View 1 (cartoon, rainbow, N blue to C red):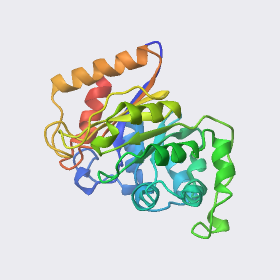
View 2 (cartoon, helix red, strand yellow):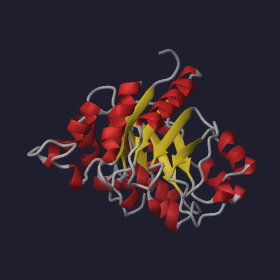
View 3 (cartoon, rainbow, N blue to C red):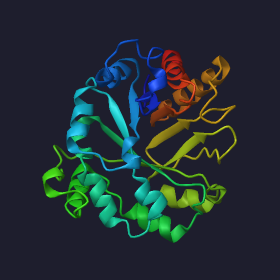
View 4 (tube, rainbow, N blue to C red):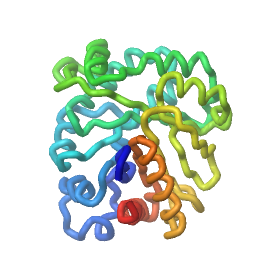
Length: 272
């Protein structure tokens, strides 16, 4: 296939209910990431949303996956839900100093997920997106401004090489489903997440950055329902069209409540 690459995976990988189903019975927990990475082509790291991780963790995750594998990393809720994108420089420095750069070539885009209560404010969004690092070396420079939430002996503030760093925004307020919001994202080359949420939150299909970033939370029942063959055929066709236009495409299944996510991801990979 010419054009961009399509990667398909899951949001997180550590789900007890998957043991004995997607994960073979008796598989040690430490080998779950490696097993998932053998069957999928990308995974979202979502522990980073809840708390600052450590460089040793990121390095271990990198060591568990094959060459060419890509992680997306979810930005911290401290920035999106508590700071609400304001006065974010030090929290961003802490996030990037916490070890992301240890992922090396497996580091893919950063996902920023806003809460439903976060209404579009052009000035706030513009300022936040303008402050995001666009290369790994810029992320390393920013990480030097970390505070004592990331102690010096646990901070990683260097990049192995300079590579582009891309960002994607998932919003849940309908106030973002406007030409004004799309224009801000496009100006900063930040991907608009196309989120399938069983009608709960906006489903906005706008091309605003170098990536197409899709999160499939369930089309019938949020986080719970599986995707039919027909639905997966349609998503496969969309992915092929985006890739043919030169876009790199990342698709993550987050319908994990009943264990559908990894199986649906493998079914989509088979169609591509």
